[in-house]
Image: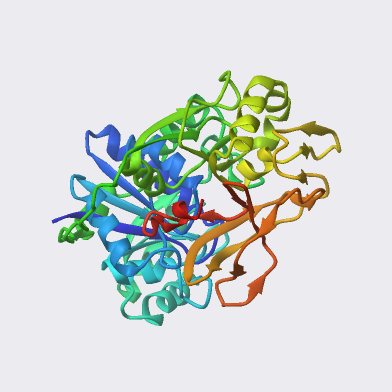
Length: 433
């Protein structure tokens, strides 16, 4: 038995991420090994989880993963932990199609009690029907307790506490509003900035919630048996290969299990398109997404790196490029002010951040008899300037099965797309090139 729970909310912007980060750090500071998970495809919250807990955070996603794979991941990474905390996504029951892919679905699949975070800034006893509805909407979803956010006084909390007690849900305290624990946002959700900034905010969040949240009671009511799932058999590859992975401030949107698959195939060498001189010798180059638009001057001025990647591609090098990685392989990238910067120049594509519009959603790629799943989330727009042998492969569908226009490009031995494909369960994606 160990404390295991899922932190969810009635809606986004209720404060569940700040509370999650504060709890992760608070429990870590007590000497506990805390394992974080994140519902959904987000690759930014997981970075903050890892920073707060000093343990890598793992995505759990019922659209991109089979139920068996998801349960296997949870069992694998939670086995050695003292406490396991999963952060939900959006509202508790919000999924890509009704509840499909929702935090509620994952809580049921893993038998996790839910700790509901409610923004009670402008509510008192009226939270009773709200919590009652969440408690009874689906009896398989266990609402174990409630933490109220943006509550500044004990007298205000007493109304909320009364509401919980009248409907049979454990009140676990409240969190006063505080500018000191606000985490800055950026256009792709929570921002990535120097670690010291976040460490300070997370440390303050931990101290802040410890004063008014009953952490001992939270750990007591969320004790659950350890999930045990047999580890899948992994056959060693016929040969090991050299793999280079771009990983720096500009390129870092990487699913941990994708990286684990690469490590099973050979030696993984991280490198930096921002700071290194040239791409390392490799059999496979992985250019993940990230924030290349924030480092255009550095990426463009590092000509030796751009030239080394161009030559690698021209000589038939194998490349998987996702979103920011695809933008980097194109001819140029234009910033929001309209200034154009030359990039690698292998793909006849130009991307721009000017007049940016959001494109997002789950994606399923159909190539022949193969299907691959992933997620699209970007603000840039891409224009095909010169196809130069560039072809579009497969068909792409959204979570409801409707075909969408997001292209998957192939040129020579390069596969490039805006889609962040999850291959942690299906490594066949790597065999397309």
